[in-house]
Amino acid sequence: MTTNPQTLARVTGVLFLITFVTAIPAVFLYDPVLNDPGYIVGAGADTRVFLGAFLELLLIVANIGTAVALFPILRRQNEALSLGYVTARLVECAFIAVGILSVLAIVTLRQEAGTTEAGSLTALGHSLVAIHDWTFLLGPGWVVGLGNGLILGSLMYRSGLVPRGMAMLGLIGGPLVTGSGTAILFGALEQGSSVQAVLTIPEFLWELSLGLYLTIKGFKPSPILALDAAVMIPEASATRERA
Figure 1 (cartoon, rainbow, N blue to C red):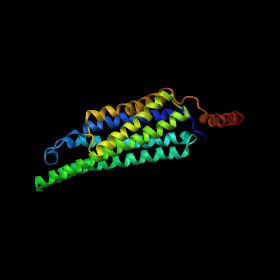
Figure 2: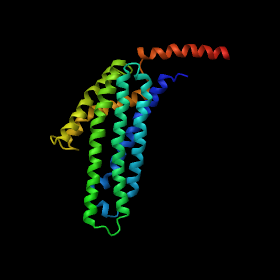
Figure 3: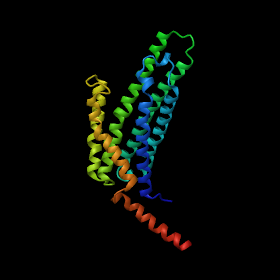
Figure 4: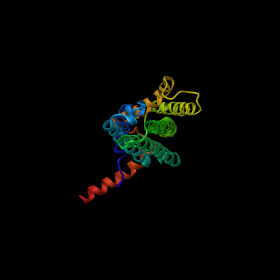
């Protein structure tokens, strides 16, 4: 049975919106563990950290879901690029998962610290925070620009499934995100700086507008959807005949 492309479009749109309502709160929920040098030897705010980790687990599910839902449609435009998008999403999620493990490890060490020397424990906490920061840079701060920006933007632009002006946001925003991530990697830009924030705006608008557009309107008419129309008409006729 062929899945209705518009159903896939709306599922994808909802999943993109879920990535926003999970990723953004998680950043704030992680604030104590990431920005308090004494968190690992202090009273802690473990419940909010666990909630942040749970939201990021949902983020991983939503990220992979967007790629899986779009693949049957986008493969008709370019199967290699579509596989590349799925792969980019998986790599991004792998970085996110490592980041989750790093903050949960800090919580576990804090709870089981016992008589461990505070200085060495604090140093270990700094190391785990550094791991999280690098995963955030290399996943959402680098791979996203390649996957959601360049690859998905290109597929959507060429297929015409969404307005091409909207897809251009991805084609512009993707290189800016990846470029800023590269600049941070080599020390030319500070992570979390206002410059980096400005450079992420086009990619942010691209993903948000894509989620809203697909949820509300679905796909625009496109030649790559013609196959579904050709399949669904005979299926509908067969259903009427059986009835």
